[in-house]
Amino acid sequence: MARVSLNPSYVLHRRSYRETSVLLEVFSAEQGRVALVARGVRQTRSRYRNILQPFWRLQISWFGKGELGTLTAVEPDAPFRPLIGRQLIAGFYLNELLLRLLHRHESHRELFNAYDDAIAQLSTPEDEERVLRVFEKRLLQATGYGLRLDHEVQSGKAIDPEERYYYQVDTGPLEAVPNGAEYIKVHGRTLLAIAAERFDGDDVLREAKQLMRLVLARYVGTKPLFSRELYHAYLKNMAYSELKLKKNAENNT
Image (tube, rainbow, N blue to C red; front, side, top):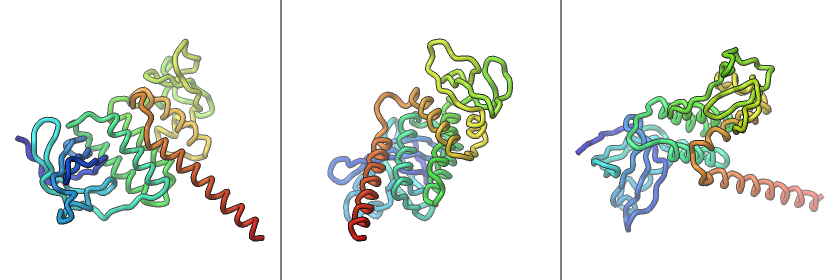
């Protein structure tokens, strides 16, 4: 029976199990994605009750074999970095991507570090769109679906930042329109920005988002991402609140 002691980890998802326990999906630095049962942690006297939360870097120990292990110990590995508003929804999006793309018990230490960096940046005023694009690129690399970003596929020529390319999933950037294949038009400067992980300008960010969405759709499955639905609801609610405040201000003048 395997035993893992105090491995740096994040909780990706949790749900209630029986009367006092929870089932956890955990992303660990050395073991990758693992499923654990945390017995009795919903009891008021449990010392683990309040720390088994998403976005908190933890040290977790467990034992077991097969698909489901049993949590034996957990302690904070860093101060808690609360996420709010759009940053919180962005964090849920990262977790959903990991749950969709990672197989259990496959180590991804570099990806764990990338996730750790992303959560740290989301807890600051950093633009979450830039954080998400960088993480998406690193996630695709780590799972074997890395993007071709530095040269045109057929000719081998270096990407020209001023040219527009037809990016085809599983193929890469092309100068000519692909025959009967799904693609997206994207400027060379956007491809180079993704490669360098530096996004200057709203146009580049918008194209990068469209490209990432096309590519990820191939691998995350057809089921809609809950975090995207939550984000749209959040924007709708914010727009309504701003409109209401504007009307109140007009009525008070």
